Every structure is written in C-alpha cells, then in structure tokens.
Amino acid sequence: MEIKVCGMRDSDNIQSLISEVNPDWMGMIFYPKSPRYVSDEYAEELKDFPIKKVGVFVNESLDEILRKVQLFDLSAIQLHGNEGIELVKNLSKKSTCELWKVVSVASEINWEDLEGFLPYVSKFLFDTASPKHGGTGRKFDWELLKTYPFNKEFLLSGGLDEESIAEIKALQKEIPQLEGVDLNSKFEDAPGLKNIEKLKEFKHRLLFEEVN
Image 1: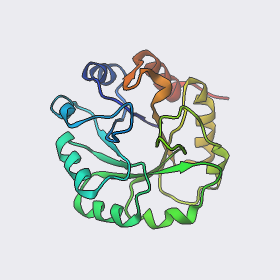
Image 2 (image 1 turned 135 degrees about the vertical axis):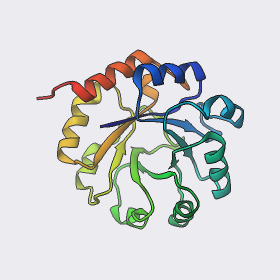
Image 3 (image 1 turned 45 degrees about the vertical axis):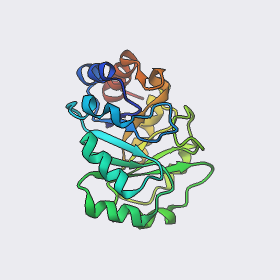
Image 4 (image 1 turned 30 degrees about the vertical axis):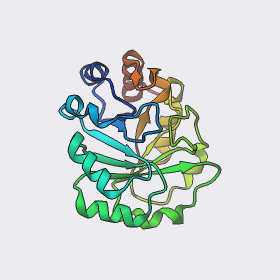
C-alpha cells in the first residue's frame, strides 16, 4: 500500500520525513488560501529533495500548473478543485506527470461524472468535501466506495489517523483498487509541520500489522 504525506513545506521536516519514514509520495499545496501553502520562494530548497513530489492545485490555470511542475520538479499533479475534463486532457498532452483527480465526497458519489476522466488520470483520490478543499481532519462515509465501478486505482484521504488502520485494511480487501492513503492534518504538530514519530508508527502498522 502506498503512502503519501501531504502538506509538507519545512525543509528540516522534509529531510526527517525522507530519512525516517520514506513515504512513496510527498505533497506540496499550491493553493494560496491553505495554511500549508507553498510559495515560489520555497522552490530552491525543496525541488531537489529525493522523493516523488505531488503538487496540489485548486482551480488553477494550465500555464500556472505547468510552471510549478518545472519550478518544483513535480512527479504528479493533484487537481483538488472543480477542474473539468478539458483541462485534464490538455495537461495529459503537455506534461509527463501523473495526473490525480480528487473527488470531494459529501453524501453521495456520482460515478458517471468521473467516467470522462478515465482516459487521462493516473488515479483518483477520494477526500472529504469541504469549502477549504482538504485538511478537514474528518472522514467521509467509506461505504460509498463499495460501489466503485472502475479498474483505475485510487487513494483514500480525509481524517486518516492511527485508529483508521484496521478499517483501511478491511476496505482494501473489499476494494483492491484502493492503492494507498493520503495523510495530512491528523499527523501535524502545526500546519505544514508533521510529527515524524506518528508517521513512522502509522507506516509500520499499515504495512506489517496483522488484522483479524
């Protein structure tokens, strides 16, 4: 199971994350209204860290997304707003990055709305719906995922913490397309500053703990 740690910004914290946790992905948020916002000033110190970097965007323009890809040496683009299929299609032509489309879940999921993205995205990411576009610390109803109709892999996000591990493993047994998890606010000491010990413990238990 893959692990993405999102909302990273502090270079010392990132160094500890890589050396002690070594997640599959590290997310940086390029949404100016986020308390974890990463501005261009961080590029010089963050772009060369040896980890696959995901840029998180909310209703951003094509040109700006591509500029950030180059500036921060991104491996994946996560679209966390109301981006349409046309933007995703154009990004797939102009970038070699993986494309991840976030589905913000409230009380239901309309699978037909996602079908048009299938030819262009690498995976979906399901998160709890919020006007702030993430970082809620709240789970949505995972029962809604049990009718997931696609072969496309997805990541699970939204309020995940140490208490979620057994549920996550049970869900993956039912839905093998569940490829990984996205960790953020429940593992923070402050916005943009992660608790490395908590992350280490979570990873160890997720990958190695037996669940009955």
